[in-house]
Length: 356
Ligand code: NAD
Ligand code: TYD
Image (cartoon, helix red, strand yellow):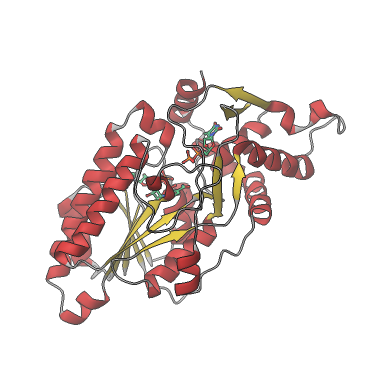
């Protein structure tokens, strides 16, 4: 079996569902702390699937991790678990250090203890795949080339600094202990099961609820958007054929300013769920756009150069931003039960704190 951490979150959850959609796939042990971002409703379709073993636990729990590795003879660990929201890291960085840095450290140590006792063949075949972000590279100017794997680390937020620290630990465990690791650094994901604190799901749900669509600062910050299922296929490919000790950037070649992203979402909603009362400008979703205070230390531009992954491993994203966003908006329209489940009291508290 493989061990997935953070598999009740957005990307981990999509990965688990995608992986197990293949009837021939190995089973998954899924360890997740079920923070505000973890949601078992995402995994509902696996309730009666014996190939999925869910364990409510913390990656920082060395004994738990080691016992699961042994009990299920794990042949690969995929580390998705993290605190992942930049704005929350600004309000309270402590949890980010705890999970992203110390949690990764404890997980690496458990994996090292397990891996050291494997047979030579099992040792050779074992993989620790660490899922990281393009945000560790810092911010680009409008004319800079996109981030390659050799771009220096210049993290600017507590979130990206904690992820950078975890990447360094993973790298060091390879160089010092020969642990068979691979790291992926990907751009902003979007798609089904995305928690509505992040830009795209927040805008879809606020638009449908008739609420303001908050744009930080001038809305000209650029992100490089990757459809989550393309990220999952990249991870599967890296796990299968990636070189040990290497890092791979994963991106969708979809650089867009935030304001454009919000306008595209509004346009798709105007088509799929037009507001009653005709097509006047005030009846369009874009009329709900509202400029709000900028994020402190807001990175201006991220862009991923995914050439290494494409040339060495033959991976390519299947979706353009236009096709991916259409599917995403449709998914939110079709899955109101899921979204109602996550719009709980604690979510409302967060919205109040952040957008007051
Ligand atoms: P998410 O916040 O949606 O999910 C994180 C999951 O990890 C949740 O289910 C949560 O309960 C779990 N978790 C948190 N702390 C834990 C702990 N100590 N032990 C066990 N489980 C814990 O995050 P996501 O968007 O799915 O991101 C997954 C990974 O991908 C993260 O490492 C993130 O840094 C990285 N990443 C995300 C994006 C993006 O756009 N979402 C982009 C690049 C990289
Ligand atoms: P986000 O989805 O939080 O991802 P990240 O900060 O990891 O890139 O934000 C994406 C971009 O959208 C980022 O530039 C911040 C901006 N943003 C807004 O303008 N308004 C919002 O309400 C949110 C949540 C984000």
